[in-house]
Structures are given as C-alpha cells and as structure tokens.
Amino acid sequence: MQPIQGISRHQLQLVSLEDSITATNPVRFIDAFVHVIDLEKTGFQPKVLKHKGRPSLELPKK
Image (tube, rainbow, N blue to C red):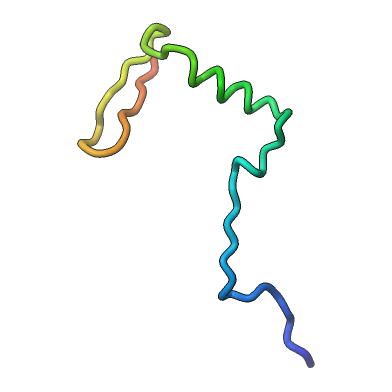
C-alpha cells in the first residue's frame, strides 16, 4: 500500500485575508466606512484595559 501523498510539511504556505476577499465584496465598503467615521463623536469612548497594545472601545450607555 502506497503512503498518501500531500503537501510537504517543509513548505511554508502563507494565506492573506486581503487576497481572500474579492474587490467587489461589501465588507470592503464597511471597512472603509469604519476607518473614516469618528467613533468618539458617535458615543464610543476609548478605554485602556492594558498598558500595552491598542485601546479597546466601550459601547455607549443607553
């Protein structure tokens, strides 16, 4: 019985999320919109939970 042939484990495969999403996918519009709006003006307040890394966003209180 022959062993199953597959991809060499010594070969590195990198997959980019950017390459996985088509140019016409609506998620690209949503991503661009979120980067343009000022979240603090909409009621989100940055809240630092750690001393390292990016600050998280807290949902506005209703």
